[in-house]
Length: 162
Image (cartoon, rainbow, N blue to C red; front, top):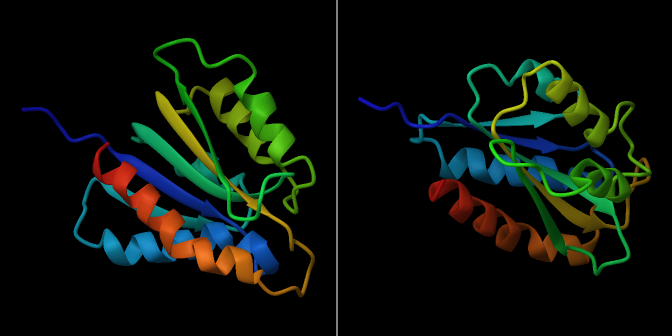
């Protein structure tokens, strides 16, 4: 008998403005996936938390805010399947999106460390959401707030088909 793949979804965020998007998406997915044993949903205040959660994980999905020139709420999906060569400079793409991260240890550095420790699962998908308000004390932008449910629905559909 084959076991279902274990999927981990992590919403990375903080209480500051648009940086909340990862947490908002995680909260929605937690409610929607309550009966799904093979999918675990977590919220992280710092990307480094992810390294501790990777045991027995076959697939990792991460949602985080990213400073970008794209319109607010645009989702850039970056995938790497480690059974195959990763796309050229996939960590570099993530680093560019998170170059001004509010986190002490960037998402790209966290994924690189997990890879060096042989903890990174075979498939990793980053859902980087274009954001603008990332300063302490700011509220989530109206433009991003309007997209939260749509973004969550898209990610939910992908997780359900994984």
